[in-house]
Amino acid sequence: MSEPQTDRTGAVVHVALDETRAVSAYTVRLDDGTLAGRADFVDPPGAPGERVFFHTEVAPEFGGRGLAGLLVGEALADSIRRNLTVVPVCPLFAKHLRKHGDEYTARGGRVRRPRPADLALVEETVKGRGDA
Image: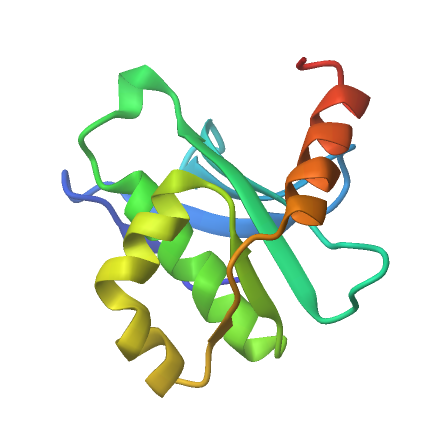
């Protein structure tokens, strides 16, 4: 997906789209392939062209390295490339877009506020993977 990036420690990391699991996600891996974090999303079946981001997590042992920011940044850049409207249910995505939303939309990004149906879809998705 993206070119290799470096985290705050200077380590090489790779952000990629993983649609092979029950819940699709952008993942960040260390150069040796170790999974360090993920940004989970669901594409609403009744709303083509939208992507609901609902959970971002970086393993505690990799905290403080800026990996969550790299995940969010690449997920948003890919959403622009794919012409998707982002629906930020995840607090990290919402915070990022509150701070950088004007820049994101200036680059061609689209955002809409979550609706009750989005929250219900997220709840159903999470239950479906057994996390609830």
